[in-house]
Every structure is written in C-alpha cells, then in structure tokens.
Amino acid sequence: MGKKETKDKKPAQFKKIYELLSKYTQVIIVGLANVGSKQVQDIRRILAKRNALLVIGKNTLFKKVLATRVQDLPEGHEYYEELKKFGAAIKELDVLKNQVAGKVGFIFTDTAVFDLKSVIEENKVETPARVGAVAPIDVVIPPGPTGMDPASIQFFHALQIPTKIEKGQIQITKDFVVLKTGQKVGQSQAVLLQKLGKKPFLYGMEVLSCYDNGSILNKQQVSVNLNDVLAKFQKNVTNISAISLANGWVNEASAPHVLANAFKELAAIGLQSGFIFDQIKQSNAPAPTSAPVAAKVEDKPAQQAPAKAEEPEEDVDMGGLFD
Image 1 (cartoon, one colour):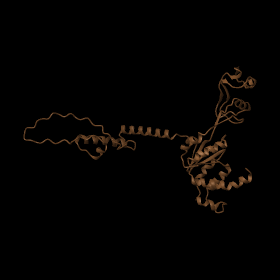
Image 2 (cartoon, one colour):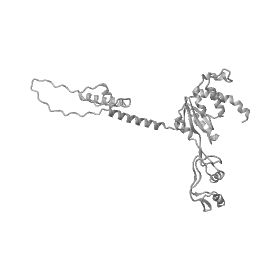
Image 3 (cartoon, helix red, strand yellow):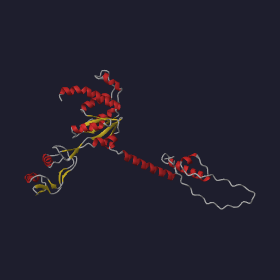
Image 4 (cartoon, rainbow, N blue to C red):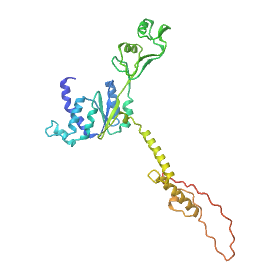
C-alpha cells in the first residue's frame, strides 16, 4: 500500500473510530503479538456474528481520535459538519488512552466481555519457533525416533542431545529441554525444531483489558468466571441466613425463611381446626373432607369421651408460594 493510498484512507478511518467511540460504551483491548493476518480475518468474521466489530489501526491515529472525542468538537474542526451529530464530549473516554500501546486491536461491542473472552482467545494457531521470539512455554522433545537418517547425527551431538542409531534413523534417548518459558529462540533451536517438524507455540489474540462506560477492567478482572462468583454469593447468602435464623435476626436473607416458617404454623393450625383459608388451598395442602361438627347437647348425663391423642404438626407443601 502506497503512502498516498494510506493518506487517503485516514479521514475515513478517523470518522469511523469517532463514530464507534460515540456509539459503544464498551471497548475490549486485545493483544495481537504473533497473530497473523489470516487469524485476524477469521476472528473478525466470528465476532461479526456476535455483533462485535474488531478495529486494527495505527495507535497514533487512535490516540488522535480519542483526544478529539473527549473534548467538545470545535466548529473549526475539519470534519465538524460530519461529526457534530454525535453530540457532546465523552470525557470518561480519557481513561482509554493509556490502553493504546503496543500491538493491540479494539473490539467495539455491547456484548459483555465475560461472554466474548473465550470466543476471542480460543482461535489459536500452531506456529514454528522463529529466531528472536520469546518462548511462552517450556519446549521439550520426548524420547523417540526422529525420522532423520544417521548423516545428521553431528547436528544432535553439537547440541548435546542424547541419541542413538536404531533401525536406520536417529533416535532421542531421553527428554531434552529445547527452550524454557521466557527464553529467546536461538538459531540452532529454531533449526532443530524445524528439522523435527515441530510447531511448539500456539498464538492467538489475548484480552488485555476492557473499557466499560468510564472504567477500565484489567486482565485479571476480565478473567473472572461469573458462574463461580454467583455460586460463592449464593453460598454466603445461605450462611448469613442460617446465622440470622439461629440468632433471631430478621434481615433480607432470613426474612423469606421466617415468613415460610410462620405460614407452616398457620397452615397446620388451619388444617387441624378446619379453618381452610385461601393460601392453604393454593399450597395444595390436603384439606379435611368435612369440618368437625359440634356434639348435640342432650339432657342425659354427659359421658366422658376418651382423651384424643394430639396430632403431630403436618409438614405443609409450600407450592412455590415463597420460593
């Protein structure tokens, strides 16, 4: 792409980024280190299906647009007539400027970063170890045949790799650590892995941070599993409820249980006395077939009735009333 063609595209790129910053309240910042153009196109198509737009451009241009968007657009601005429709300055965008550094891209979306993070990062490609690259993992060659003929044995000896000749090919006899995490790939290591047909590294986009309506969520925060957070919250609510009930405290956690227990007691009294109120009917609790009838008083001497055993308290089905 020539310099003139690039220069001609800058106005359109400026206006597009300005529009996106005006439209979306969330911007996901992704790292693009070692990510190829085909990977970028693949993830861009995947994100488009989820109403997310990946923008990659020069950091200087992005910073220039940001600096313009956080201030009221002056009437003398070269794109004033086209940009004034996007309204007043969005000053909170200023926190985003510190995220524009290195090889990064920007994903504009209304979908929560927690829902998109796995989609963004799962698209990884096996990549050879290139000279000068920093190893993201330990690279170990396990024992076994190499598929190479004995003529290459001196190469393995030069790297002090334990080998033997077996069935007409070189065989490595024990684990050999080629690279350790954080170590730069040297010429001999790159050649060795290439000869063995190894592509030890997996590269893809990485979510670095997220701008969300004036706040920046860092890498650790965007990695939070919301299901785990919800499970812990529910467990703590249960513990608070149990402690509150044991101590007779009524609060938001214990109140539903207090009401449910009170209803059970009322329902049990109603069932025993034959006073069936509407809530008992709604709870599907078994009602007596007929209310007890008062005994007719006669002039005959009253006979003492045998003592009636006290009925046990009935466990009433709540039927979802307080669930």
